[in-house]
Image 1 (cartoon, rainbow, N blue to C red):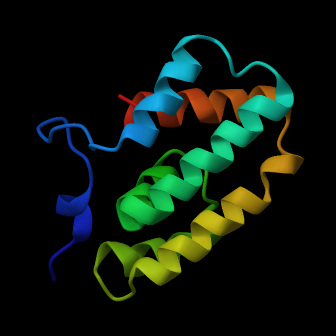
Image 2 (tube, rainbow, N blue to C red):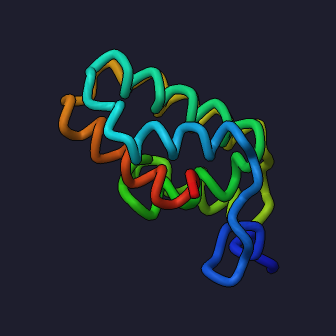
Length: 121
């Protein structure tokens, strides 16, 4: 069975080209995200973009970082082995998005900064 890991972003791959990701990266680099509403809006925007341009690699990455809970291991495994598709990945991303309001501010900032390090280059 072939895994989708190859569809993920590895250090050898060029950065994902999407101006929206770069704009979020610039805002985070400029420390404009420490206002609670602003950084949650940035996080929602980043998740929406990733759901559009790379839902499966984004879900696998988020699972590896603990953003997507262990109870979704089966679903992530299905995605990794191409037994399910982008629709299921987008559903998992939407669950993360739905939980943003319940995140502690510090955790939300840390998640945003981690995601920007990976995707907002």
